[in-house]
Image (cartoon, rainbow over all chains, first blue to last red; front, side, top):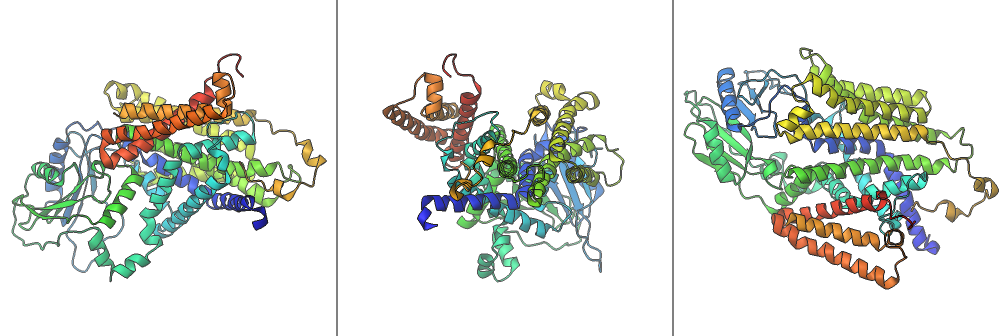
Length: 533
Length: 93
């Protein structure tokens, strides 16, 4: 290798780039695409509940939430309220009943959940996971134990970081050819597209991959924490300091007005509050904890303040965060972009789209590059077929799944049991169907079918909204509801883009096999392995 | 402030773009000589740097740097699309 000098190094990096990108590329694509969608998690939470009006007066909703909980669960162990704001569908409230002696505490999803709508009443709303699904899927995947999923996603992210860094070396001309886009030139166009989406948003790609690893760092590299802390409790105490739990006294006492309390907490915390928790409501020992919203600051480790629930006096506040906590919190905050304004969020989203296109085009390039070198293009070897077909299934299938899920959100009957879960099942059914299609049919018509179908489904959603819901595009625009209007417009744009892509693929004629290959079958090895530039 | 920083970012990448052989020829008629390329690149880097204080002034030290990077990416993206998708003036192909 040393005799090849720089070329040897670049070739080794090209090898690394190719295979680190391919190995978990399909997982990475789904994770990247879901993460991109999750930037509009709150928007989708609203979009997927078209029954609910926009929250105009958050205080009215919070008062309604308190009223509801007081009636429904006056002597619960605890209440929790995701505080309403203009960007939430309402206030998501839940409660935990007092534990029964001798009964293990219930694990899993809390079923005592209700959405309080803009008028402060418990909402009659379709059961859906909304945008939360994409957020969780982004790092927990689905149908598998969370811990395995996070390891898988963590390893995929690590490979992504390797692919990005080795890619910078491999495609070193990208900075010189920064502004070049050759259209309609087959492999070159794919490469230019791959490079452009990679380089234009390179700061984002590096940031998002690195900070993504940081969010999983403690799981991937547990040794620093296990060296610094004797047990898990000490670690959690340092990271998420919480006031001591209170004992129920049995003396009834009424709870303070939560809206006044939140107003006070926001002043003391220095920003909007996002979450509120009441322990032992209705008891003299009641405590109210308020946590500052992640949308109000960069660090995701937001401070917390605790009040006496009967007098409304502050009794505890989280200590000043140390530098390590602030660093980790800021990186996670930077990753999730909860702090971002509308415009910045849109940029996050565009960068995420660029990243998804980068991953997808990279995977397709793997086959495009190799197709030319196949001995017999009509009967490629197994590895080539596998990658080619998995590309169809993963890259063509996931967007189709998303489109089908959004339709399921609209069409599944409201009274259906397990409706929220079935919306998600629909995504995977469609995805699985794409995989089946990929196995039984040749790739090219599959691309056309999947892309085309996705395009039609996506573009038809806003049309359906227009006629079947009260929150169609024009109504949203009229009432100045930018988020809902934006999602509808984005669906139209993506629908059109998928249709355009399908058309391109349908019209694509594979280039005639090059004569060169026959004429000069023995190429110098170095030229054959020339890294993509 | 944000708008100013954005305009500078846009300017910077327009200059970077025009310092490449191909786009210079397409947009301005001739291949640039070495001195022109250096001048264009120098001016581009200066614009990148000049955008930074405006971003800080707009959003402070915590969010300002993020804004700066975001605007640079946006500027680069828009220039990239403009240079490649807007047809060149007739006769300069």
